[in-house]
Length: 126
Image (cartoon, rainbow, N blue to C red; front, side, top):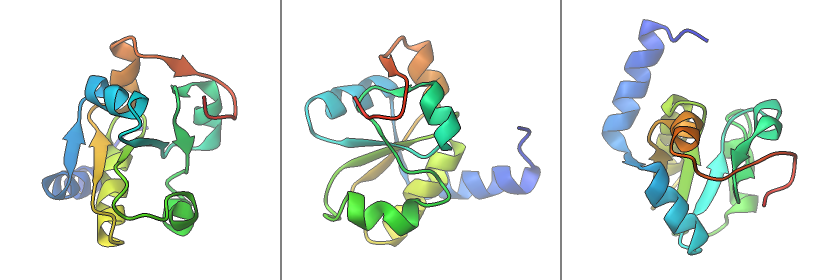
């Protein structure tokens, strides 16, 4: 999907307000239990392959469902999407909701795969 100029500007502004994290560091933190990985892509993308151990809360529902899934606003969260744009918007939105430790995965799932990190398939978190 081609990104429009307005969308790119929106993402650039969001990235000024959030912190990005590398795939390797996100994996290390998730495996140590120091962060929750949240895939904000649509469920069809999730089923085709997601970061091992991640939860799926798509961009369309995350603000509605995050409090049930992650009630403690101090819990470290790493959001990711396909390339890092939508997850930057989500990270900014969650910060506005009061979540204190939200980061966006730099490069998204594309970068995760390029670095050879574990990918799971199906509907269940691993």
